[in-house]
Length: 318
Image (cartoon, rainbow, N blue to C red; front, side, top):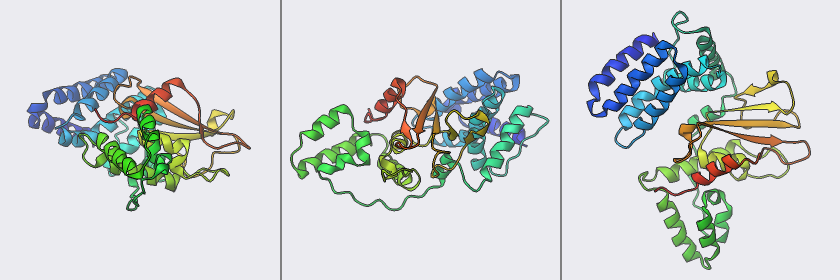
């Protein structure tokens, strides 16, 4: 069934978007690479296809490509022995095409297993963090008074070093109001009001699902996990395990609102390169949050490369 859908899509793509010839060529190359079993090359082409489709003016094409790219990426990842990544992409595909099925005679056993596992995970009573975020509808944002304390709230995660310095020198609330207006304006270039609304959704989601599970009583948006979500958005997938426990007990896609397993837990958030800020050349990034008995929960593990990613995410739009 899916092969017929993809064939029809490819024909309409090639016929209907002559102005985006590079996209149709990349789409055909990706399909041929998958057909030939060139899995790594297929993933690289999908990365290029995603980047091309994300360019201004390609919004309609990007929407059309979302399901096929998620499916074909899942196929490649399954055959590259990356079942967690494949499962996350097949979940993305199934959210867009809930009635889709896979032909076990046309795809490898690894692909079929990952697809079926994604279907099974979507039927679980506790959905994955990315799916929770996608289905989340935040309440209307409550206006926040601009005072000296404003920088200590969730917006403070977005501050660049220069903005921290400038904010510290302000003496009056009218000055701070002017700063805040310029702060949001600098981050809305080319995005209209989308940046502000996305920020507010991330804050509301973090407060609803990422509350601290220790005695610190921090709101979710002010935790390490909240910071990463506010700066980068939801990960491709999240998984938890007990530190030093056998890998077999690791649980991909546990509910993000539950405490880490046991007193010594590790939660990993996996991001693909296309989810990272512009200028970051890494193909994947994994953020680890550690919980230890008697200490703070879900503390972000220090890593120089990850610190650079978070710093890049704070940059205003160019």
